[in-house]
Length: 148
Image 1 (cartoon, rainbow, N blue to C red):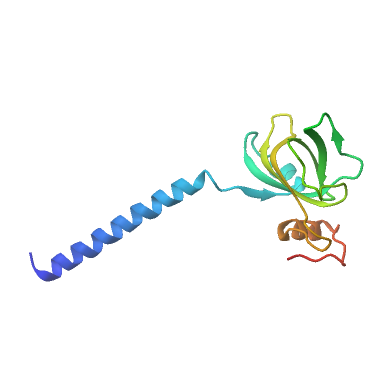
Image 2: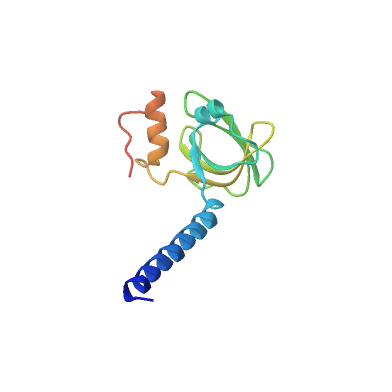
């Protein structure tokens, strides 16, 4: 075998190994990717129950119902759509009605959302960028609010 052929064989072998490695990484990440959606987007795309995702919007006023010391039910809205959220666990201290929230979990067969993580805004000016963008699209955004 000539030097040129050995060099080409080495280059193609290296590219093959890199391709297989990239494919394995993408396959492994496929299970950990969680997509962000608003209630309006979920209603429009008819997401499959059991799908893991992040739901963002505002906690609807008057919707928080504490069923016992650890179970809470509330409604997340973006002005165009609403979805009921069931959560078992401790809520963040800053969680309250009318505030921005992101809930991570799965969509249930009855159309509700079972959250295993709830995140609330952390100061007076913060709202997650994705939630702010979705609220701007819906025309619900208050001009004095800022994102970080």
